[in-house]
Structures are given as C-alpha cells and as structure tokens.
Length: 55
Image 1 (cartoon, rainbow, N blue to C red):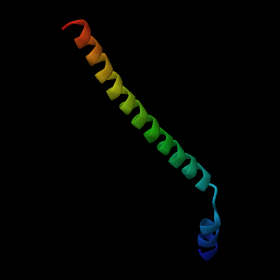
Image 2 (cartoon, rainbow, N blue to C red; image 1 turned 60 degrees about the vertical axis):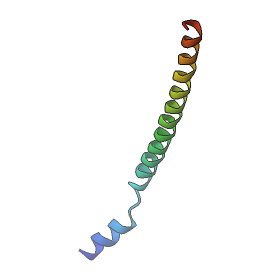
Image 3 (cartoon, rainbow, N blue to C red; image 1 turned 180 degrees about the vertical axis):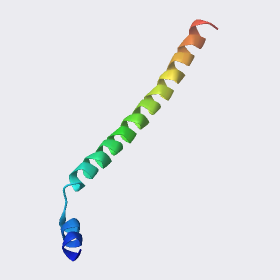
C-alpha cells in the first residue's frame, strides 16, 4: 500500500492536462471580456449613428 501511495504522489502525468485546461480557461475569459467590451462600444456607436440619421 505504501508503494502505491509513493508512486501516486510522484506521478505527474495528469499535471500537464490540468495546466493546459487552466490556460484554455484563462484565454476564454480574456476573449469573452474583449468581445463584451467591443460589443458594448459598438452598440453605443450604432445607436448614436441611428439617432443622427433619424432625428
């Protein structure tokens, strides 16, 4: 049983997959934030343009 626990604690095969998952999650959050910011800005610009065209 002790041998199994020592081997389990030294095993790092899943660590890389977890790291890639965390990186992907970080990139996704950054993309969502950027798209949300651009969307809000674009909405304001289009609303201003529509108001100028149709007073």
